[in-house]
Image (cartoon, rainbow, N blue to C red; front, side):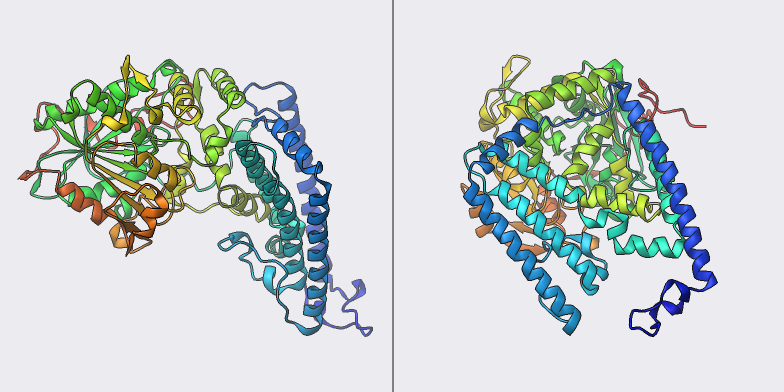
Length: 626
């Protein structure tokens, strides 16, 4: 707007419409036209989405995918059955509003007052200065926080329902109140209002174009773009550590990385990443690649690259992944190096499989095949498995099975990505909704988010078995799990273990990881890193970020462990390296891929990692290089 916006019109009320310049009127006219265009596109968009839903597309989400209506009914029936508690909560809310009105009025007059309610520390939604410096937007923010506090307080204070039901309703209530935040709406977000005026509404028309593109990409489901998917190319910008594929079968490629030192430790190191994601989180770029760093420390590094399965692999089981994945890799390493025993790493679900394999080897008399096991953010006891545990019930399992049947017997990567994003919806959903659709901006290229968006599929038999036996029934921890008619007992495992957890992990919470660490019968070194499920693991020492805690003891509870732990600045990798060195043998001449009994098949990163989940159904091999 023009400078007349701040000029008094003589009656103390600021400029009137008659004071607007011709340029101002042109701006408003253009904003109106763009908003009208956006409105028409929005109507067509909603019509198309509704038509697709009414057609009964089997891959479209159900109206209540979490089957939470019974739990909501139970919790709110219990809440309204105690009118005195509801009245007290309403009285507190009214007092909060009176305080807010008083403080806002005082602020307008005096320019200074204490807020009635403050956001939680670290809540990034309110970073814009307008949310604190502009009295109107500050009042909108606090009003929202009062309402959220009111609703969450009612749910959190309810008695008479089981804890799991209460936690599920609490989680979903938080999701709903987060969705209704004023930051998520154009007319109550100061950054969006400013951008709308400056761009004459073009931000909203661009945003709708991006929204339609994301819906088209998701075939009616919103496939929210979090990063520029053309910003990186696997094997050229990321996953570039030199190595060779030296073994492959239906479900894995085994990569042996080139040595970067003249000598290496005698015992090889095998990494089993999760099959839920692509392996290259461990080899993003040179500055943060764990694989590259390990080769520089003198380790012979092998890594499993899991297949991105199509319908033809829908019947592959957890046992198949253990035998054809982990055990096949160990056998191949013996052929490549002559070593009969390896140090191993299991990340996330790869760690759950590794723990099962340790118990299996112990029961079958072959524990020496694995000399040591390191776990990154991996759970072996799922009693405290966090918010993901809330939805592993019979109804949700049926919904997952329905989706996999509709997709040819595999779970598409988008479903898993949506689930994980929901656990941090403000950071991974709503921030991009605002950026992409309201501000009309393209997401920036970011290696971590590129990896996060490069999802993998999962076979039906494997995934349903994993959810049922681990999350739903916790059979591995209880000693109730058998594979190949071999009963698995973690308490019988005497293999030395290094157990990494992260303080802010929302997928494998540290209390859950610690509880699993207590299940093993041999020596366990538990270590807790700063940050979360990814950054807590991938923290190169050169970055000088975060911190970690160590404690040589393993007391009964994690709180006792924390009470006796020592904090250290920076990455935990150096502590782990020292632990690995003690279990890796003497120095031997560096090993080059292809020097042993295994021939080189192709260069790293191989073919499996190049297969995108948005490729045609059934496509599990990458296109040949041109």
